[in-house]
Amino acid sequence: MSLIVQKYGGSSVADPEKIKAVARRVVETFRQRHRVIVVVSAMGKTTDSLVALASQITPNPEPREMDMLLATGEQVSIALLAMALQSLGVPARSFTGAQVGIFTDDAHTKARIRKIESDRVAQALDSGHVVVVAGFQGVTLGEEITTLGRGGSDLTGVALAAALKADVCEIYTDVDGVYTADPNIVPDARKLARVSYDEMLEMASLGAKVLQSRSVEFAKKYGVPVHVRSTFKPDPGTLVTREDRGMEEAMVTGLTHDRGQAKVSILRVPDRPGIAAQVFGALAEQNVVVDMIVQNISRDGYTDISFTLARGDRAKAVAVLEEVARRIGALGVTHDDRVAKVSIVGVGMRSHSGVAARMFSTLAKEGINIQMISTSEIAVSCVIEDKYTELAVRALHEAFELAKERPAD
Ligand code: ADP
Ligand code: ASP
Ligand code: MG
Image (cartoon, rainbow, N blue to C red; front, side):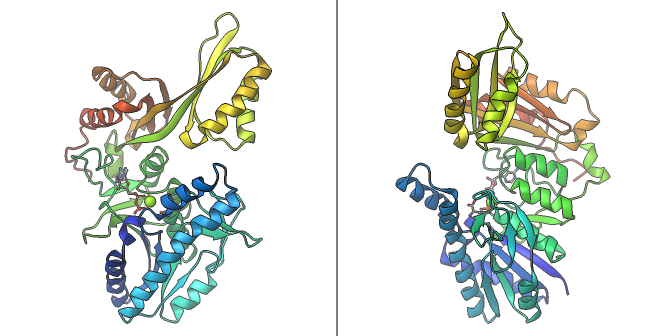
C-alpha cells in the first residue's frame, strides 16, 4: 500500500465547490487503497488579504503577530476539506502544523523546518484516516506559531513526504505542470515532462512561483519525487526528479522572470578596503537579503555600488544605507523599483558555449537595455526595465526555440 502526499494550492480550494471537487479527487486516490496525506493552502487569495489587513493596522507589524494572523488562513481550509471528505463517507481528520509536529526555528514569517515528529500523522493513517494538514505553518520548540515563507505549503507537502517516506509528493495547482516559461505570459510555452531538481531549484529561486524554492531544495536533499499537476484535469504533469541523460541535451530548459525586485545604488563611495564589508554588513544585520551586486570601476578613488533585492525590503535597505553613506562619506543613495529580472535556466549550459551571448543579443535586438548581469553554472540572469518584461520573456522563448518539440521530452 503506497503513501501519497497531495498538496492543493489556494486557487484549488478557493470556494466551497472547489473544496468539494478536491475532496472527490482525494477520495478517488483513497479508494484505490492508497494512504493519503493532503496538505492545503489558504482559500484563494486569503493570505494576501490577511497581509493587507495587517498593513491597515500598522506598516511594521511584529513578525510573531503576523504569523499568528497568517496561520489562520490554512486552518479554515483544513477544517472545510475534512468536513467535505467526511460527508463523502471517508474518515478524515484535520491537523495544524503544530499538531503534526512540524517544528521550526523562530525566524517568524520565513521559518525553517528543524524536525518533524510525525507519530500523530502515522497513527491517524494507521487507523484508516485521510490526514488533512495545514500547509505553510509550523511551531517553535517554545510553542510559538510560525510560517514558512510565501508559497510555503509546497514545503509542508515535501517535508511530510520526506519524513514519512511517501512514494510521491503531488503538487496540485492551477496549471498542469512546469512550463518552459510562465504559461500566463508566454502562450506557446511548452509543458516539461521532467525537470531536474537543480533546474527546478534555479527556476523557482529566479521567479517561477509554481514551486517554492525551499520545497525544491528539500525535495532534492531527501530525494522526494515531486509531481506538479493540475487540480482540474487528470493528465500527468511534470516530474521533478534527479537529472538523467536525456535532460542534458537541451541548452536552455526554461525561462523565468521576477517582477518583485528593486535596485539600490550608493553613489561615489570611497574605493578602499573594508567599504563593501561595511555596506553589506549593515544590510545583513537588518536581515536584508541582497541578490545581484555590481561595483563600477573606480574613478579618482571613488566608485558606485549597485545591487538588487526584494522590493519589499527596499525601504528598509535605503534607510540603513543612508546612514552608512553618511558614515563613509559617500554622495548618497538612489533606488529604482521599476526593474525586473529575466533568466534562462538549463543544465545544458554546462556543455554549450554562447548561451549568454545569445541572450544578450536577443535583448539588444528588442532594444532592451541590460542593467545588470549575473551567472551561475546553469543560469544567466539580466536585470532590465520592468516594462519590457513580457517582451523580453517572449523574445527569449523564441530565440531559444523553447516552443518546439524536443525528442528529450
Ligand atoms: P498555488 O496557489 O497552487 O500554490 P501558485 O500561484 O503558487 O499556485 O503557482 C502557480 C502559478 O505559477 C501559475 O499560475 C503560473 O502563473 C506560475 N508560473 C510561473 N512560472 C511558471 C512555469 N514555468 N510553469 C508553470 N507555472 C508557472
Ligand atoms: N497561503 C500561503 C501563501 O499564500 C502558503 C501557500 O499558499 O503555499 O503564501
Ligand atoms: Mg504556490
